Length: 474
Image (cartoon, rainbow, N blue to C red; front, side, top):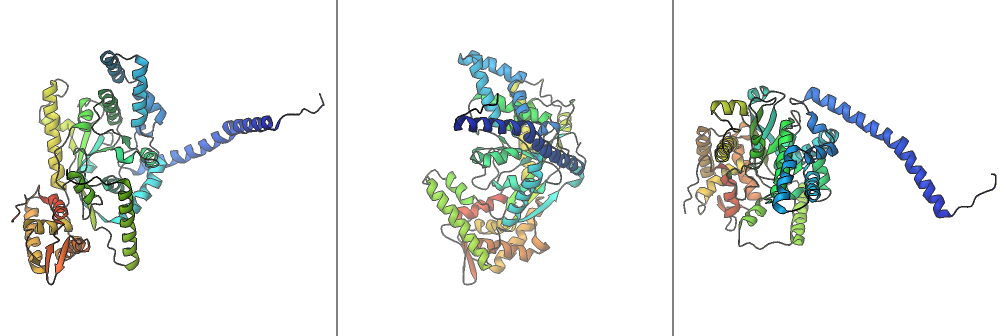
């Protein structure tokens, strides 16, 4: 019993590693998890006292539980049976596909990360790049929203900055969930975006089983009271104009909506605009079928050149950020009230009638968004030049036309943002942004469009063309 036992070194290391793992798993990790869970619970309690719309239980569920709920949802299982019959595959193969889709779609929301790191990140990025303004908000209507309602922000899509801008502006009211596309699937962006509450969507997927799983997740989130942001245009505007709405996520939300149910479904039109869209030239190139596809090396080199150029401008004191970024929040639209006013019954209607009703609602929502789009200085100046692209303007001529344009827009009900409430300053800011980018050239005392920049200037003018159609004089 007292004789020493000789063991090989590898076995001693293995036993020590196993002992350490048991100690870690049984004693240390539970304590660490308890500590962080307690911190998160404290944050959630503080947030629910401060936010206009409390964090719903569905949003706070663990990701693993949500994945299981989605995978074994009765409607998903019905879709699996139909898929097996149509494709002639075993049930276990179809279920494995569903699990993979569920893991791909479902977010892993972290309230502590969202309101601590996420809020700091959104605030830092937006304030670094833009002078951010909340132009208009129907505060009375927003205050009247039922705290238990499912709220959906319906937005135009100008830039990938839209997500960050609206999260920043809504931080003191609610936590937003939005659909992220392929742009966010790269590591480590995917992990961060998922932790901030985003769910992933395959744009244009023709896989009907995947679409069924996605539809059920959206419906579960809506029924669970998750505040969501959707872009009915289905993608970024490539020419600056508002695009026709696609049904997509709106259709999924409305398919299961019950006016007599526990929660109302409330849509809030949200409109954004920028003096400079970071992706403007990329979007214009992607819309041109004759443009040459750029290599990844070219994209990286161009991006780095852009960053270093702006850093150099900061050092020299010649950087004015990228102008103004503004958002307007319109009047909430209650679906309970909407179906009552229009005498609609989505569950009793046949498929064609239901699609037509949802399309009509989507059109109404986009019209509401269009009416709310902020009119910013660069859009005003760009519109003036786009009216007469071959003409040179004096400073006084630009000011006179912009003054008249502002009056016309206000008569149309547009929300015109005037920095410092000074129209002359707004004109100066807009013209300075365009001349600094060499889109407009100053020659003597006259200003004209740079010969190769007509498309980019029209891109910014198009932000106003749903108010006043552009009649270009050649």
